[in-house]
Length: 391
Image (cartoon, rainbow, N blue to C red; front, top):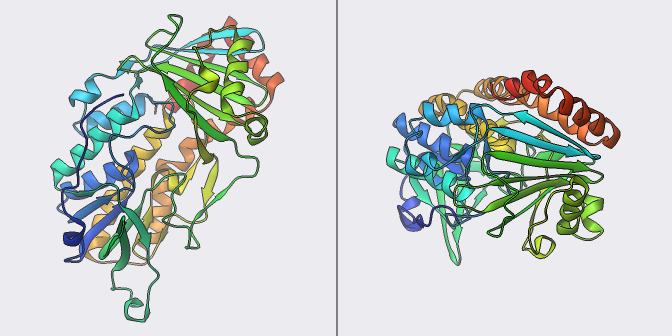
């Protein structure tokens, strides 16, 4: 496991509701923790809430691309002890249909989510944010008393049998793919037809074949599987599979088949390891803002990433929303809704275009084999795409 430090609440639940907060951020992943840090740095009274305890493992490719690394450095986190342990990435080893291509990578790193999430949350707390882990948040509907545009939003917080209602001038929904915070609202994200599901596990018994600094990806019928060595010696295994392939026997056997097809060694007991899944990956939010509410990170839409783009999108959206949210705390204006939509489109949605195209290619086995065969002969043809993903 990555960082072993358990993060505890900085305030009791009872104290959370004693005053109207400037902002409540629901979800302490890369997007939420980044937003909370940036808001706190601007002097906003911000509270960061998550239903999980930290550190926590979750399904993730655990890769930071060059843009994600640059965002961490820009935030002053490049020298954080956990971030310094990240394993620099040098190449992508891509296999399909008996062909193998090695593509250079630039500026990225592999880092467990246990370490990354803890580092980002610690930075938010050090900046002044309050933190409540193991707390479920529910967005309450506006009642007759709060229909005025200057009335704060209300969030119900739950810890086991304890409850508290907190008011906030601004609420940020950053609770990811499987989040339930926006379920009862008209702006909940809709899943794209045929979206693949994510699956993942880790093992401490990695064959020597898998070297640090290399992302291994094998593609075939039913999806693709990626493997990378983490900073603590574990092998991270993350995949995107067709739902039908998983229903036929679970994610483990699909990953084993794809590794066999690539001719790569299968970690002992891979099929029987404790795999976890995700909700369908590719989705699009109907809108990314409403009155005193901003949606950030995966909750605002998601496309299958490949070498660290996902965490870059999340951190970029968290950083980009902060200036607008801070203004909304001071005084809400209806035009903030369309302003955040434009900013999000520029910062995140347009950057997802390359990954959306790549995902479409990977759904066509013949085209994937042709592409890998081409890259095996001329790997630098991938340089413009890799460069675009790192911008």
